[in-house]
Image 1 (cartoon, rainbow, N blue to C red):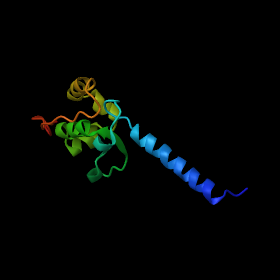
Image 2: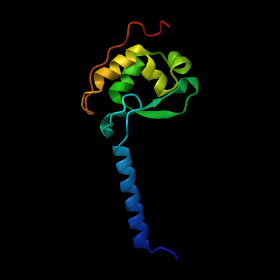
Image 3: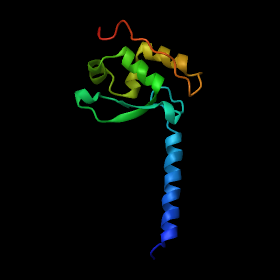
Length: 118
């Protein structure tokens, strides 16, 4: 049975609400905290410059920390998954520190001195 115009519009509106709720509940691939929409960054697991296309959502602070610690080559060779990133000692320390902060927390990030020295 064909749906009427109003039912189609209601179905479309319901789908949009469901999609917005799913977006609002994005979870950081690194620290597993909910990400507010204003602080959501898409991180390429393998950098685009190295042929990557798969992305995951991260807090802006987590994403900045990843790029402060690792070069694109290091990310492509050694850290192509969120689990690999979480296992690095400096990332573990950062994650432990940020875990108890509110989701909207966005600290300043410094570049690591060891970046690129692997």
